Image (cartoon, rainbow, N blue to C red; front, side, top):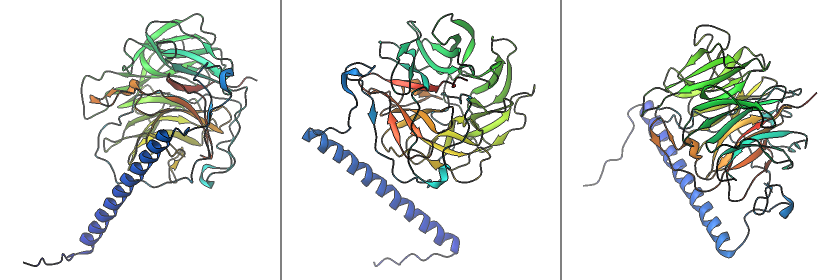
Length: 416
């Protein structure tokens, strides 16, 4: 029997059919693009053609096989999003990276909405703290952004992660965990040269306040998959005293420059992870909450620009975790700053002058996020790298490479 052509009975049915077909076309295009990319990489590898241009050879502070890499300018910024994913906690919603207050504050160049342009040059005087397993165990290191003056700061058999600088650059707060997959552990503070470690409390993702008197952090206890994010954001004095809760269903705190507001990744009214701000001064949790990001993507791990105008965060929607940015008031469209389709990105950190964002890029998944909210994901076997991204998305510079992983970048403040 010959089938009868389907005819929409209403405008709503017609729009629904058009939407479904367009979504199917987008999915097919994504599969074709990914397949073509993998085929090209396989072909190049088979022909023995190098995929990247390495830097200055054996003089690199990372030693043999650890050379700085430079990438070509990114393609044109895209602002498209896929339909809303099913509500569940963001798979990267416990992580790191807060802004480091600095003398600068000009925002991202000429404005991130203007598209790619000449990328900024990171001054060699800027410094990063980060975590790496280059010595067989995750430890905290520091180095200049040109790759020089690499220095190991911690020496402990446990894993040290998530460093954050004090505003005056004299101290670093970090977490120490028994298992690299843990998202909370013991919070320690030490001098910037690694001396005089002091235990403060238990928690994760500690971040200094702009005036250096307080530290924000989260507490988390995930024992299995839950409908809500089982984490809370707290504030304490810099010596660990006077702890108080400021937000529920919240993680990854990051201070705004005013020192009275905290941004975090938390559940909105639809139980979807988004960037939210809250008062850091109130004795009552969830005071003056304001949602910054909206559907259709999960948004977490916020970091606020030094001038307080923008928030960089990690988005998960139609692709792997990737870096995006939006105005702090939530107006306007989010801007994609990176364009990798086969690697995950974590832990944004603004430079003191607001022109560069440091991130962790992992071709697999950071083992720190291997089991979140009871959802197991692939553990990384290929090394992660630290990437500097121009705040307008125009250029990238890879600061690490080789057979070891580098993660949790945190810009140090600039001196007077």
